[in-house]
Image (cartoon, rainbow, N blue to C red; front, side, top):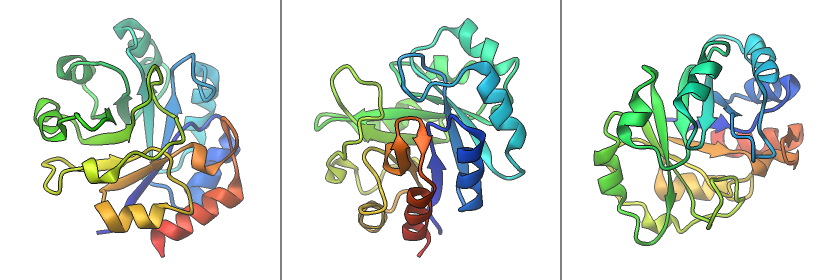
Length: 204
């Protein structure tokens, strides 16, 4: 089975279309004000309006207020939600949309328990833990911490780029990979050549 790809932190229409052109299965829009990749409603609506069929649009939230999420959902057409904070399974499931739950992996993280707790999630997104940072660290975590028989599909994130994504796929066989900083010129601005190189490595 081929490895799916989500390119996250999209802030411009041209970057979204570049991701799609090179074969991305999903794009991620960040609705988290402290992030340099945060988008406002107007940006999100414009980007979503240009996304063709069969490409998923994922909205990323971090410990967001229910009202704020509903406000986004009332105006932006999202296919899936991604929760990147300390949300409970009940909080993730309350919006009636498929969701991903991000887990910032530390040596003591029990991923088997996480898979059980978030059994309604479509997948776990495994990211690098960094103190006080919700994500987007650009750092790789120890892939050996991923159990061999994780009961849920998982998406590998954290420091991936064209130089290491093939090794990652061969080592841990994720359902999908998630990249943001690894295909950027600057934070929030994607680099077409880096996207092409990344996708080439995934699909070779």
